[in-house]
Length: 105
Figure 1: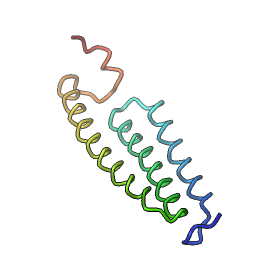
Figure 2: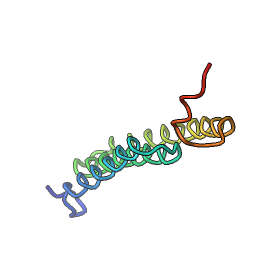
Figure 3: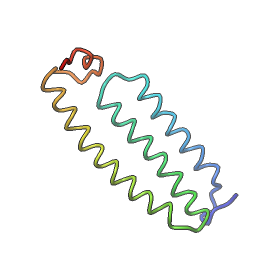
Figure 4: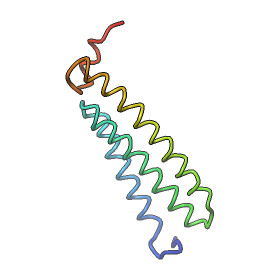
């Protein structure tokens, strides 16, 4: 399958799968909250790569419109996540997510 730019869509699928896998492994195995946020963003970017690749392949702009919505949601997620992270750091003086077990009501 060849999209308009001549690069097979399989390459984009493998790239997105690799990015998404790296993101999932980072979320599962890391304990630092900043790295976890970065891995979540990496997973969202993998989805964006797939949406743009399939949008280009199908000559449809709907995938690219969804990318803008995903980017807006990702920006909001980063803003809220960093606010929570700052409050967590102020209370515990660390960004290790295992410390969150100590926080009680």
